[in-house]
Image: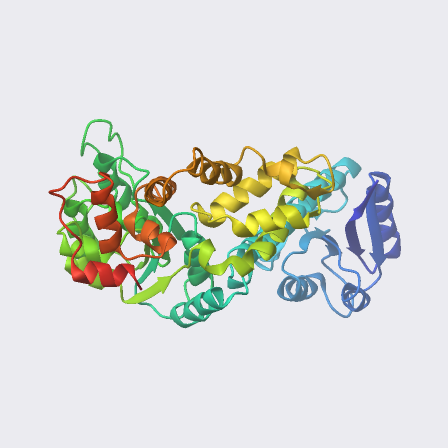
Length: 468
């Protein structure tokens, strides 16, 4: 019985309406019969069907006018027109007025059933797509970013200010801090929200293919180019192109990207014709682009083109007060996905989570909670549920530092090595965790033989930036 699949039959010929109701009810549909369009419109305010079957010729309001009214007020209702005056002209007019299909009286029972089944399938798919669009909009809205700390409040306020603008945005933040989520929130909160959001990771695509991915190519441009292909700039036309890890773009492509930003035109690989594009760029990086500019690794003119509206996403260690909220959110998400009974964490586990430096940021926390939800035998995540994770590895690393009663100098050397390892050698991050500036870290590295004696010392500007 399709009790949730509602069909409304509207016909001022009571016997005809009753016939259609009986045919469809027998097939399992939940059918309501109405003798007039006015009656149906009143009831639709409280009980809306997914499929409407209406007669063309009726007193008071005829079927065509009724169809137009329903289509205007309830665009997701799928309509079938019944008519005894079958003609191509009538069918075309009905379709233009919003009808899914039409059926000519007298009709065969199976014909009515089959047409209604198809209409219902279309209605359910339409409803599902509408819900998915709403869910996607919600998923990438500002409200979907979890955080109540002052650092995140500043991000929210910045996003609200930059989203309505047309200028390019540069998002800075460590890996795993949520830069793409912020980029999507900027897109979905702005004027381009109904146009495409196209993300690309500049690191994930081989250098030799990246130009083709961005700008497209024409047939025969290179071996394997068997047909013309649109680039991501064209795919994002009218919308937003998110260039993640822009700092990894080579200098040749940086020059071509700069030209596109200046001229608003692209030239496909192997092509001779320029194509106009309208794209907003949101770029992101975990690198210090100012330092890269001073080192000649990133174009200064491109940096200023991208850095019109800067947004900084804080590392998780800078907003530890958000950890309980994030943990709660991730538990709810992964418990539902994995049919788990887990609904919280023990105080001991939360203490351990709050104490961890989270070099992998929110992504690391999310992965840890997903694992713990799956492996936990109880209703709460305990310390034992996070054994074997990076959290406990960090604890073991700390314990190893104190093996064999080392001297203070040995402890310092081991700790600096551990932090450099956790941050994958990123000196800015390591210096922040250690509470020292880049120049001091450099000197410590030289003392402990972690860098060669002829390595250049950081410039004053670099040290100042690292301390901000």
